[in-house]
Image (cartoon, rainbow, N blue to C red; front, side, top):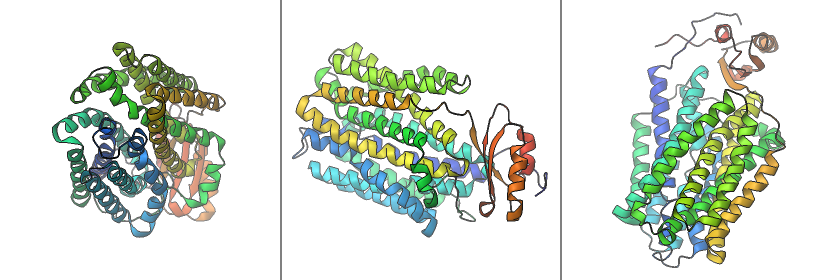
Length: 465
């Protein structure tokens, strides 16, 4: 392998941009359908046949159980039968689940439909197809676009959910999500390019041989427990948030978006300085622990003052500011702490933990609300945040390193260790693992110190087209 073998690419090609945009739209369409039910379902405790608070909580969170259990298997299945067939199957399952729920007038039908929605676990397959369709040097951008689309879908869902519920009711909302799933299938057919080749991407998909290594990593397990706890608290909170707004604070359900929209916008603005402090000024652990603390304080404040309008709204703002900060920080920490060639496996277990946390949060939140009232759910959230804070306080300070992929092309296996040493010698490169069969070097780099121009001399990516 010699330096400067081909021109280096600095921009995404039109095909890469199209792939990233279309796949992120499919991901967000599906997540929008899942999240739009969050601010709505609990308001149907007295309207759905056989509904109880415990069953309502199960209906909110049950998608997380099927999603969490099937996400990694579906990703591995996409290696065998192809990415697009798995994504089509997942979207079809999601649409069928929506139809089951839409046609049901009992809580049990809604639970079955939500569980079937979660069976459409296509996240890993979408990530793998994104990796197939983008070159190594641009994959981080494409994955970041998908991440941004998820956050946008969540914010839109909290605003659109109450509005759609007011216009078309719960059944109509499920029919809408079914149509959105079919639209996703159309986007997949018309907009998403076909991959020229399909291969393993250790940065984007789980690798069974790495499961043991990742599950023994106590630092990564702390982060898995963290995202599990965060989404447990979030989902439990949405068992009671809508009821508090409607029954305690007297806000008609059609106007709940009046609360969610400004709270979400202000929370995003409020978190930006802390993101800058964490990343640029390298105070990640302090900011992270502070956000966990404020999640707990916000939950405790809601337990005490949920029946007072302005204090409750302030606590809601505090909660979402800390929640958004953690949602941005946790994947970054996983990327920093995962071994260079095991990021995909680490993210697979991280994502599964997130969905399983949503399942437990919905289930526990419903039981507590039915037995002990609204405050008990927020007290649960505060207690879980405290336990998380104690666990996270022993977390190592993260190395401020980013994942970086380099397409090295075909090289003899005898040159792998030599190339790894050459790459490690470049300023800003902390680790380099060369996987000959992948034709990729998996790197950990310090972006502030990286000599990217020298590094890219080892890339064999073709010129811009």
